Amino acid sequence: MSSLVTLIEARTLEETIGHTLDGHLEREAMLFQVAPHAVPVMLAALTEDLPQYARTHFLNMLWYLVTGESHSTEVEAGLPDLEMDCRSAVREGIWLIYKEATTRDSETALDILEFTDADARRVEDFRSGVAPSGTGIK
Image (tube, rainbow, N blue to C red; front, side, top):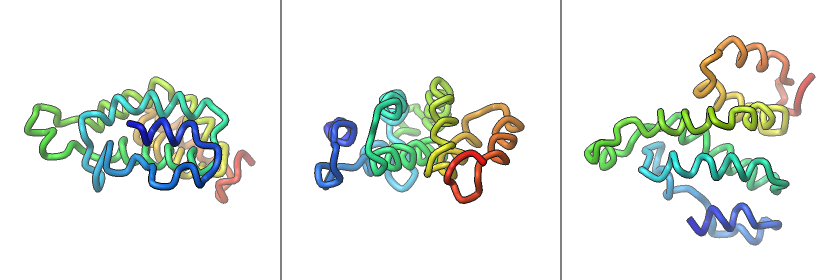
């Protein structure tokens, strides 16, 4: 998880070169056991003053985690519902995703909300109040 720490602590794009979460938590939307445990760390990171590229990476990764499914090796190990565990973990900090939906990454955040917020009407009402260009609230 040193890439996770590097992404959180980096202040320039150059500091992140070679560091992503791709392949660590999921591979081609197939989730690994560590995925649900990384969600709270990414949510906590979103409370910090992160550079936009790091915010975008964390939001994209969260989207992969809530829309993916358990890797076959995890299913065989008795973990068939890792995406449900990831969704549950996101719900613990759902207000952060709503906050992110008012930023430049609004579409990704809104897509995450569609998979995690049990109140579909709230998501739709919120979506209708967010500018289509993804630039924030109208």
